Image (cartoon, rainbow, N blue to C red; front, side):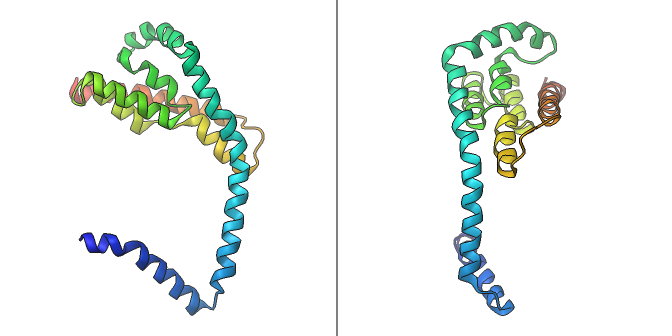
Length: 173
């Protein structure tokens, strides 16, 4: 089984090259064209990433995130959402790596099999890094106005957080 895994990438490349030769496609110019398109996409995405990532780190370093967590804890606790997951809920729409760090910290402190740890894990799996996705994909597609995409995505994230807390309590509460 390990041999099949080790050979999978070379076999896929060999298959694609053989298929291209049978079809009469000149592989090298097609590969160069694809690389050019990929670089155009990268150059379209980089400004959004350069702007987004420092903003996230400044939010965390300034203490604004902790202050916002303090304000939201009582409300979310009354909705049945563990107060330990509030930082995760605030970071997740902004940064996947930041949310993963917060989630792993929650799981390390509360335990993987605890209600809070399970809730954090389900929240990570059922929500998206909304602003990152919008910045990257809208930037790559050249879309300037997101119109209803941001509110709809944030509502979907909120729904994911609430559903995660509800179902974790239902199954393990």
